[in-house]
Structures are given as C-alpha cells and as structure tokens.
Length: 193
Image 1 (cartoon, rainbow, N blue to C red):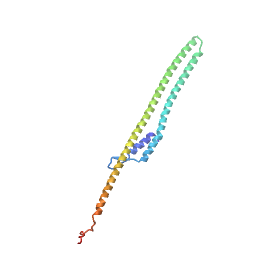
Image 2: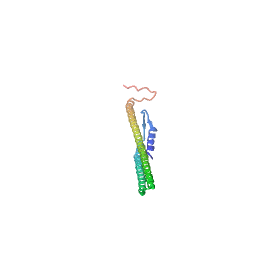
Image 3: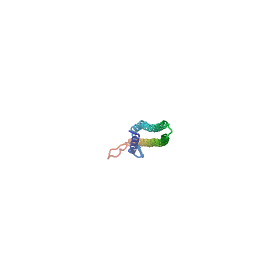
Image 4: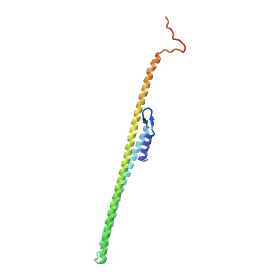
C-alpha cells in the first residue's frame, strides 16, 4: 500500500469516527491509527527511494549525452585528421569537417541543454512530490492527533459525569435508608406509653 492510500485511510477513519455524546469530539480506534502510522513508516522510505532513482537517472542521462557528444567530436576530429592533402578535395573535406564539428558542438549544446532541462524538471517533480507527501503526512498526523486529543477530552468528561452520577446515587441511598418504610394504606404506628 502506498503513502497516499494510507493517508486516505487515516482521513477516512477520522471522517467516519463516531461522535462522543455531549462533547463535540470523536472516538478513534487507536489500534487502527497505530497500524496506519506503521504503514507510513514502512512505505515512506520507498517513496523517497523512488525520488533518489529519478535523481540517479538524471545524472545518467547527462553522462550519456556527454559521452555521445565526445564520441561525435572524436569522430569529427579523426575525419579531419585523415584528410591531409592540400588539394581541392582536401580543402572541401576540411570545410565539411569544420561544418560537422560546428554541427556537433551545436548538437552537443542542444543535447546538454535538453538533458539539463529534463533533469531540472525531474528534480522539481521529485521535490514537489516529496513535499506533497510530507505536507499530506503532516496534515493527516496533525488532524489525527487533534482527533485523539478530542477523544481523550471526551473520555475525561464522560468519566467526570459518571463519577458525579455515582456520588449523587451514593448520597440518595442513605436518605432512603433513614426514612422508615410503611405499607400502603396503614397509618404510622402511635408511640405507646
């Protein structure tokens, strides 16, 4: 399961949590929450590894482009070196070699520019994705933490209400025990002299 799926499950758990009566708070199953946090701990490094792979691919693309440019340049130099005669064919060949070398340099510059633009885009995308994952994680953990705090406050309030009810019941019981019980329809007994 991916980080986004886990975050969506946490969000659904918070959104679908039951309200604690009279508190305005919600109740969340802490086992489920801990399970989802563990999933995030397990899946987040995988997402970061993907971003690292993208960065490595960028470096490999640049290195490949530079190797290709060097190969083309070397071939152009070799071609120019082979032609040593000063006749018309040699002059034409040198001119052609010069054009090829210029085209090669231009192509090299274009390849490097495109590669750097692609690498920058990949880096920006990886950074944006990592930031988005962290923002979502922070938002969901913060929201979940608030939900847990609300649930804790609601439980404390419910405990207080139960304790007050018990205290009232305990106070009423001695009063009822002190009052004598009379059967219905009988007058209270007269004290005898």
